[in-house]
Image (tube, rainbow, N blue to C red):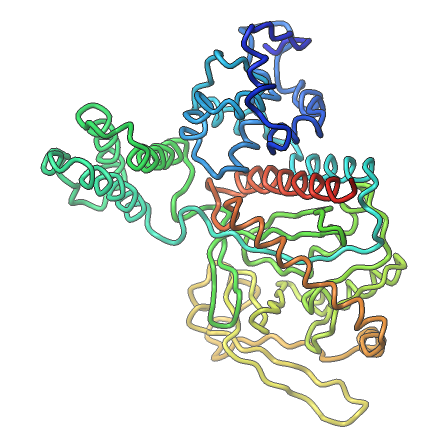
Length: 486
């Protein structure tokens, strides 16, 4: 049951916060900047209003997720720190002496309360609303790009992944307590995942009951990671075979296994829209959605800046119809020919190759057709037929017994010719210089805030991570812009 009204905290120790939490503390600044009641309004339908025991306040649960995004901690370590870190308790609207939650409550909150809630759009729209209220969004242009996040469990087998995490725990214990050598259970010899899982449970039990170092951070952090991995598996979240993660390509000879976050950002470096997809998706396919989401959030703009991935024929036609200038340099092979085929192929601008729906990158390309001025040439891409023969998506794409598999696109069209003329103008060249601004934003998401690697399995978990991380990054940027105005 969720209480219909917030209760006033009457602890005699609340005054400690005014003494110990400085005015420039990030958590204090966020608390003062944001009215979090919008979270309560969104989540009320997920709770019973008049039956059952009192639930942990939804706003507090949401703030735990924000702390996780700010400090890149496991659930267990986050809750542990909130026991003694008064800045955490202040942010969570708790009395200094109040007990913290059990870390398992965070898992239940994510799975039961945040399902079917467009959290990513909600949080971005809230930050854009705050920025507009503060008079911070004055530019009339946005930049678009995509950044990748590796799947938490990468491409290792479930057994290999569990072995790695249990080994990390044993190694940390041995470094601090040599007496534990020989006290751990015998390693499993079969390839059965259940046997490996049971071994990991035994490792946890031994460390917690027999080791003198289980509470030392160097051990406890690795033990908490192992616990989360066990919990993920028990809740039927896949390890290496993450059902949503896919292989994407950063270059012709460089790939990753995971997800993509497609971003739109204002000239003031505030993220105005985001779409999270599996790793193999083409950047250019999400331009229209990013534009529409930015507009829905309240952004007004007439220019969009992006790299060559966004200069497809459909994007050029769409932006022209919307009276938006698309500052995206042409790559001569990008067209909208995909719609004419039963199976859609995506262009990967980093590798300069097309990718099939199964995520396989073309192995080479060649120009074909006549070279006369008025004759459209084609670029033909060749795929590895050995992969095609065993591909689960080969029906309708690969003809059995064929010695080659190709995909061809027209090099130019009238629409592209118009864009080619535009990109030679001084206006285009000057605006294009602003594209670099989105690169540091991608780096900020990844490095201080742990966006390099997914914190859980599946697209849903990635969307929660993306929503909270972008929310925090936007709030930090708003606070910085406000301080610069003073």
